[in-house]
Image 1: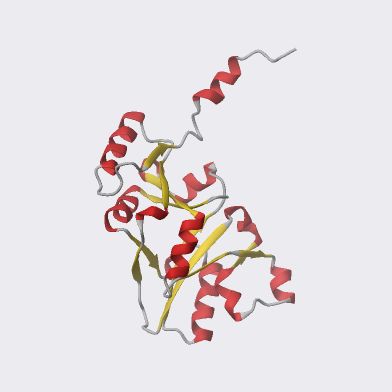
Image 2: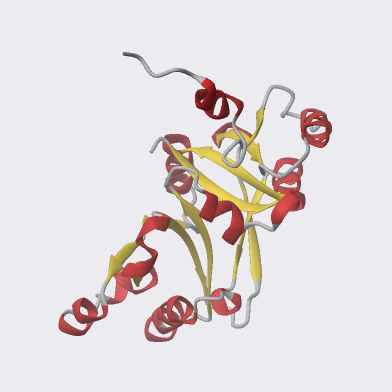
Length: 208
């Protein structure tokens, strides 16, 4: 896919656009404790004080993304141009980024991940997420979050959740366009749960 996406809540999207900063957090708060354990094992074995991370996806939009990674009408997705985003990461020596590798339990038992691969390995059941992960390491212990300056030019568009009423989505679009530098940013409303073109197909007659 040509984009990397971050599904989150609308206030965080607005914060990113206003501050031009992307925030990485401590994985200890993640629901998937298998995943956070691998990152923490990497931290301990490398001798880092803290490792912070941010998860994105290269997968096409699905209902799963909206229901699991956002919370109903407050959800939003910020979409990054993959090429520009990767160039930004390469220019910042404090951030690294890689696609996550998905392994089965027998695979990691037979061939344990290398030390540098540890924070980028996840169980096979999550393969559909097509995750791309950002990492930041520091010698300081117990660091909870850290934000990094990011150019607005790496952002392709913002997609609002499919449960947001059209009138509200239009109002949110106006708010985003009033942010300096975002006057022409594309803002869309997801149609995955209600698409007029899809529904019209039900009334169409099949070709003979």
